[in-house]
Amino acid sequence: MHKAQWILNKIYPLESLVRQCDIWRIKGQKIVFTNGCFDILHHGHLDYLAKAADMGNILIVGLNSDDSVRRLKGPERPITNEKDRAFQLASLLCVDAVCKFNEDTPLELIQALKPDVLVKGGDYTIDKIVGASFVMSYGGKVETVPFVQGYSTSSLIDHIKKL
Image: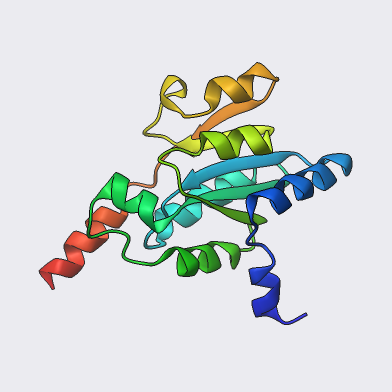
């Protein structure tokens, strides 16, 4: 299989990913889920994703659709379209699956996938993490990963505008 096809095969529609999660569970794999816009991948994102991946065997990334990003971040975002953002995330060795969602939050995705571990960035507290109570209701864990200081998509955009 060509590498580009291998990457594309890691981008799932929800129904297929639910079936794939069942297969991973049968094999005894611990499924970790995180989500975000991942508009311009940077060191902070990569550190975060690697640390999230270390919390289990399979890392699934829920990716905000372009419409969802616009609603959350404003009309000038995203910088990178959802197809390209999904391809970039899927190309990472630590990411096993990418699934786009159009809602403002990933709650429906989390409920469908039922991950063993739900991970968000360190700017969140467990009571503010969407899906946390659902994941904990069946014995799953909710974890946070501290941010690498000095990295954010917004600061990168501001820097580029000043050039």
